[in-house]
Length: 258
Image (cartoon, rainbow, N blue to C red; front, side):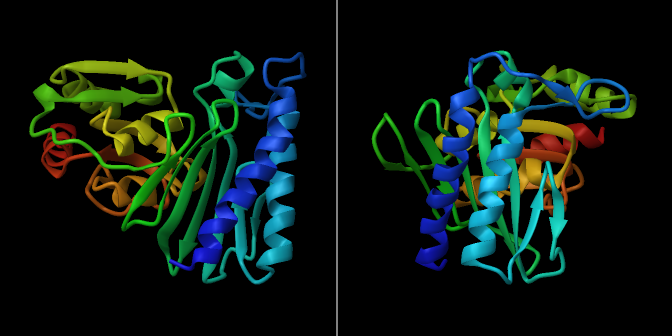
């Protein structure tokens, strides 16, 4: 991976953090983007994405951009930045620190580089599909997933069981009923914890590309695997399984398939 692109991740994360942190745990207006239900967005989301788009446009004008708040530009480019300025906006508006800025790069259709940055805790998890690394209060280190042979040994996370409807809910329950530990509500942090070797499995549904692209190179670089429920690529989002150990990933896919 081009070292300049890796360094550019930090520039983007710096810009996003500078736009977001003045708003965290302060009074601000929350808007609802959803026609039905609740899909919150704040001034912090929009300011962070605007800042990142400006940097990309200046440094890599030929690259495309896909962002949660402002959509796609040059989506047919060979290199496309995929941005979620605040993944976990519900946590953000609740004052909880389990949110992060997701910065991914798709090159030739493959998720090739990614970072999850949490400016409040000062943590950054990044990877290029071949290696993954952490910088933060715990000291810089290489990320590595942990061994987990079976679902019965696994710690599982999902944002909320409400993600799953109908047959998908039944499929998810087949996994959850077998694991040792389940945690909810961590959004992108759960995937970072897979890469760091603290969680074994994440199962989710209905994801957008900006929810997952940045996280794929981090988990893969740490030794894990991220696919759709049918074992295919997860770059487009949809129903996703991320695991630190291929054995538990295979067991999860079998359980989901019934």
